[in-house]
Length: 334
View 1: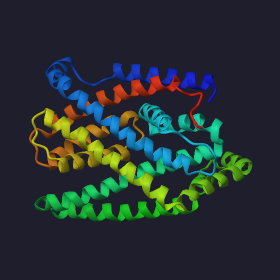
View 2 (view 1 turned 30 degrees about the vertical axis):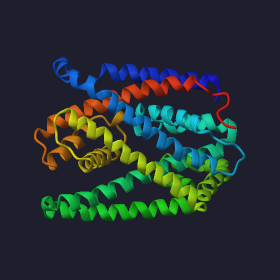
View 3 (view 1 turned 30 degrees about the horizontal axis):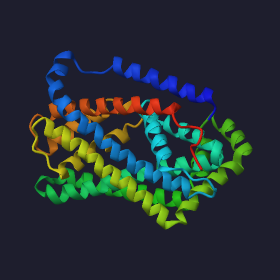
């Protein structure tokens, strides 16, 4: 990536941090009440993500190194791109910031098409791991909290199962044949945009087809595919420790299974409302609702306090990710 573009990313990240700090929705009274607990448990909450990002980076490394090129991405640089990439994803609407950053960093080493296919593949794997988490969490809830399953929840479970099967079929077809061209062709049916979309497609059809071929290539390597998916899923499971520590900080007798359920439901709500930067509002509501469903007292209060912890953790890692933008870029691949 050119130094100019890297500096633009850096300035954008700094500006986003300033905006988030200025709009942090916690009053001083609440902050003073939570501060002692935050000081005691915040290192554990932040530290969990050292391991979460390690699993993410290992999955990203496998995907990049399984491509048709002779370069090798080290784990150290995969970790840097992972932390910085997620920092920009947190700070942009739709979470689009991390993808372009990773593509621009990798493009000079393996080419734009391969860099784009690697980043798209990782994004697909990241989403697929969330789907696996949601499925396993739904099964855990039915097994552990069978007595809470009424007609409404069984209906929701049926709808969720149908949506899950559709999503898995979509990802199967995407991994097998690629999906860039098919998704882009949807723009042909949008009024006003279709003319420009067709013109762009005519100029870049071969490049887009090459990206799809690169995406499908991972499907032909079951060891790399399963390895990266397993690492991403383990990252989600380790992530549940964050909510385990947070709920214990406020005296809730939470189990690790409950922590997984809280993570899965809040993650589901956040991804449904993915167009909010940092999932503002979506996570708070999701946390409050699932904590109430699980039967903990003061579900709304615990939801707000849990969200406060996660916001602080995100800001810490955004600081780190933005700071890493200017570090170790000369020899990012061997």
